[in-house]
Image 1 (cartoon, rainbow, N blue to C red):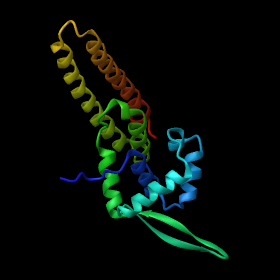
Image 2 (image 1 turned 120 degrees about the horizontal axis):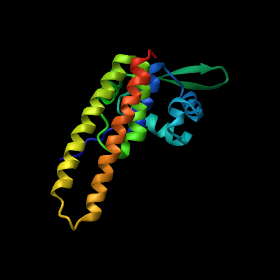
Image 3 (image 1 turned 90 degrees about the horizontal axis):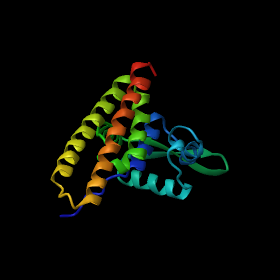
Image 4 (image 1 turned 45 degrees about the horizontal axis):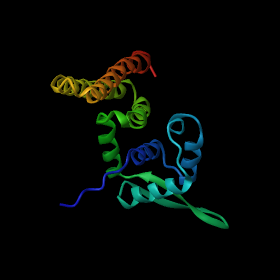
Length: 183
């Protein structure tokens, strides 16, 4: 059975930028160069950004119109499609599955959720808390079944468990900062 090509996290975040307002690809690149918002998380080369945008457009998540510029070539203005809106909304609701993806993916989701308001932030954080708790239970069971001579494996599982515990504490801080206090 062929695999279905899923958008990457960075592509979904790009949909979120266009969701805010239609944008020119160059404008997006300039925004990502700034050390604020998503530019604080990611660095994308302009050619890579344009390739990702072309893929999103080919997949039907973005569409464009051309804006005349006098004697210069027309500029593309990108808009998110209804299909792109649906994919973005689904991504925003889903908790991050792997700890290794947390730094980039969850922070991007948190950025967009905070733009939607406290209810969206609260729901995202609660789903992420539950995913972390479930993963911690699995890791606790895993460490309990490891033979005593598998010390390295035990340490790895304990490390992952500790990361999730720290993540839960940090999620509490997010709730206090973004939900308890109006954004």
